[in-house]
Image 1: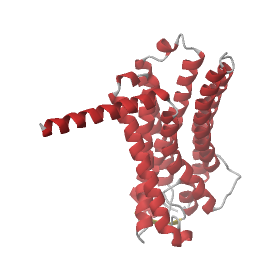
Image 2 (image 1 turned 180 degrees about the vertical axis):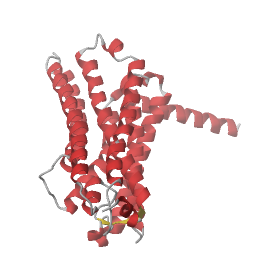
Image 3 (image 1 turned 30 degrees about the vertical axis):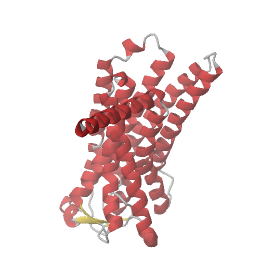
Length: 321
């Protein structure tokens, strides 16, 4: 079938959660509330890190970049999901679908790279504290952040290009709440073998390698923590690292189960539930876990609140007098 037939499908229909029609209003409220918390929480993190000089260190530079990434990542998916839940219209044009697919892949890949770099940063800070300032200088940190973003932006091109080159002759109903790779390939009326192989190789390269590097970093971190003589120090560090690793495992585990499973076929409803974790849940959990488990960040938030109250109090007193 020639490439001219690829344009025969001008738009797709996102079915979303049509099997839960009676729950549409409830789902809309839940996703809207989670989206609001995600954006608001990440904005607070970005503002706090930017304004407090005590937080101008590599760890918080990575955290600020992660917060910005989570806002962009979840905003690629959730607004369209909310619009579909609020109305009966579920159509998305072919070009808009490809744009959503590209940004979903590139932001997801960027998060994998950034989480691996953040784990390496914690490895250096805990396992090589004497050499940390030289190994992870501000210049090195900035280059690593830029490399994560550039590599992620480049990663999104191959899957989007492979999907664009497929022929879609109908039907055009995507049994998902966003333009994802597996349901799009299922709708193609041309051979998807090369696209499947390329996407599988890319998924293994990005997801599995980044997850492996992250786990290796935490293995060295844990072995270093075990040598801490103070029981309270071990417990505090274990608690923080355990929270980080739990959220990272949820993110990688759900992503790997979706894109690195050539012989595993789950129902579409199960796929949707899995997708909710890495598109809606982890963008909220990641920055919360990385920030609220950190005493320095909580103290910075308290200082910012006190300064805000002081400014407001001075302004009110000035207006009275």
